[in-house]
Figure 1 (cartoon, rainbow, N blue to C red):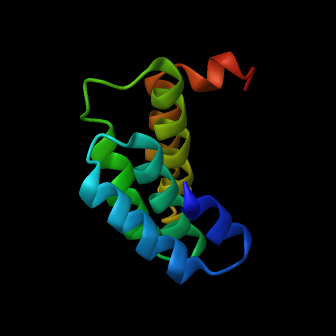
Figure 2 (tube, rainbow, N blue to C red):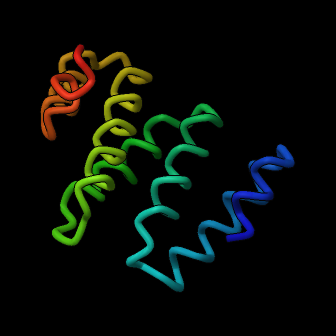
Length: 102
């Protein structure tokens, strides 16, 4: 995916634009949604990132690894919005805190 290369080049706007194209063409591309949310969070738009990551929690087709990534991203979004209780709840959803020894 070209968006990964764009991000490494430091052009978040272009990476966001490319990822938006990808998800509009491939609505099942969970990794693209995850990356898009992370880019929004890194750009200071935690609310938009939260919305994207939260919507992924409703998908029934996530692998275990994708669920872990989604809930980790979601917890980071909640931290960015100063909602620590929900951040901890997100980590507990898939037992992430317990797996990491936290």
